[in-house]
Amino acid sequence: MVVLSLPCAMITSEEPSEISANEPDYVRWLDDLWAERLLVARDRKADLSVGILLWPTFPMMSLTGIVEPLRHAADFADNSRPLHCRWSIMGAPGHAAVASCGIRVHADAPYINPTDFDYVVVIGGLLPHLRAAPSKHRDYLRVAASAGVPIIGVCTGAFILAQEGLLAGRRACVHPFHAEDFRIAFPRLAFSTRDDFLIENGRITVPGGVSILSLMTELIRTHCGPDRAAKAVHQLSLSEQKHMSAFDHGRATTFRRTEDSRIQRAVVLIESRKGRDVSPEQVASLVGLSPRQFARLFQDNIGMTPKRFIVETRLRYGRFLVENSTLPMTAIAFEIGFSDSAHFATAFRKKYGKPPRSFR
Image (tube, rainbow, N blue to C red; front, side, top):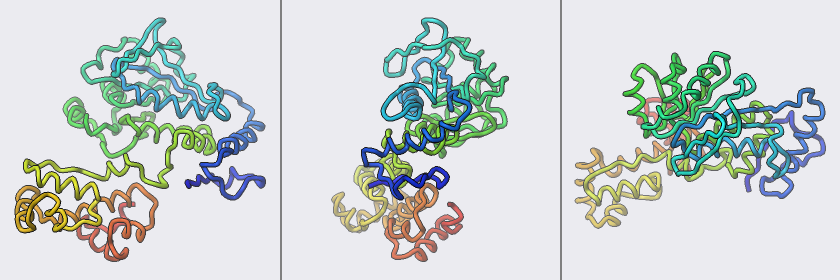
């Protein structure tokens, strides 16, 4: 059972001390908190308004990753009226953008004054098609930037912002798949492939995929309050990092490639278990090699002994937990197979040169 808690300022004397996200009245409880706040609000305009520009062959997941959190935060219960969050897909009359999956999405609004939005979002498409968008899209971006409206580049939207000179003096958040392309295209721009999103001086970049959900949750929390963010999290079945998702576990794994299929199987096996509950002898048996053969081939292909690779895999997973979770150090030590936090800290320092807490 996952329990979501809100800041004390949002708690009323009539609420239960603990609310389960699985209880049927959870969303109603959040709506009640919101309604009380709205009763004293003088300005009833949308708390969060977003204008969207779609590039040809844009990823549909990025569009839905923006709209769905807004939809849940915008209205009470399971209604979908754009009351307190609003979004518009802009373009010339009759304009439509075709997503990479082939679905055609029509613009539902003209090019609205950018100052009417809290953010303007550009969702890029496949790299060969970045120059295929209407020229008015780029004109609009420059106008929005001149007006001081924050601009969000989603997926290859970071490339578009860079092309327009809108990332000068800022880092970009780029998907690892596009890292080399970005480096070649914009050698003077700094970028990161390790963040879910980056917010720097009026520009926000996010690599797409599920990272867009992290960004939208943060924007909703900032503009609409923690109750609206909690509702979006609940409705979208996000975990608020109380438990690691399969995607998060995947981020902690860096499978290595080797020509020997037996060693490749061994690497995948060790890393899929994060180095836990596995020994060199067990792995050797599973891939059909004697311990001596396995140790020699593993050293030749990977450059270290199987035992050392297992330990480094556990430590890599431990570092991921240190940087991306709120688990205590003792809990992390147990999670990755160390008997206590002291042994974990010693091995961690030997590997990374600093104690675990310095990475948190």
